[in-house]
Length: 272
Image (cartoon, rainbow, N blue to C red; front, side, top):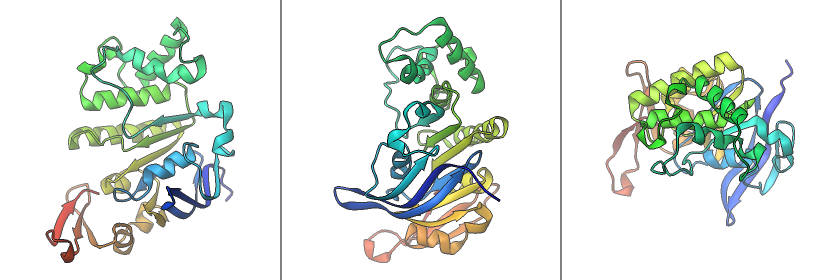
C-alpha cells in the first residue's frame, strides 16, 4: 500500500550549539493519521515538531512537510495549525475570546490589518468546532484552563488546516480536564479526517487515542501502532532506566526504577 506523507524525516539530526538534540531520525506520518510523539522531558519531542515546521534547521538529513522543504512552504504554511507548548499569550490581557481566535488569521491578513466581519465569522466557525462559540465575547482571563486550551486550538483551526500539531496541550490542565480534551481531539480527528500530531509524555493517551506513535529519546526508539511497540523494552530504552507498565483502570501507568547512585529514591511513579 502506497502512502502519502504530510511529514517525512530522512536520517535527520538536529543540534543546539553543537550538542545533539536528535540523531538519525527516519519515519513518515501519513496523511489523515493520528500520531502521538512521546518521550521523557528533554527527549527531543518539541525539537522534532519545530524542525518539521521549519523553525529549526537540521544539521543533517532531509525533512519534507506537505511535500516540501519546511523553509519553502510559502502559502502552504496556512494549511498547518500549530498550538505550541507554551502559548505566547498573556491571559491577563483584556482580550475577548473571538479576538484571540482571529489572531490565527494574521498570517493571511497581515499583522496590522483590520479584522473584518468575514474574519470574525471565520473565528466564530472555529469556536463552534471546539464547542466554545457561546464564550466568544467573554474575556480570555475569565476562562478555565481547559476552556483556554480549546480557544487556542480554535485559533489554530481558524485557517481550516489539513495538518494540526498540538505540543503538550494538557501541560497546564488537571487530570479530568486532560481526559476531556483528549476525548475531544479524538472526535475532531474522526470527524475531520485531518492529520493530527499530539506531542505528549502521557502514555495513557498513546494507548487510548492515537493510531500510531513515535517513541523518542534523542533517537527514534520505536514507531508504529501502540499495541506493537508499547512494551517493556521500548519503555526502558526510551526512559533510560528500568520501567514497567501496569494497568490501573482505563489508563496505564508506569513505574520507573531510578538509578540508586543518583541519591534519589529507587522507585517512583509517573504518568509519562
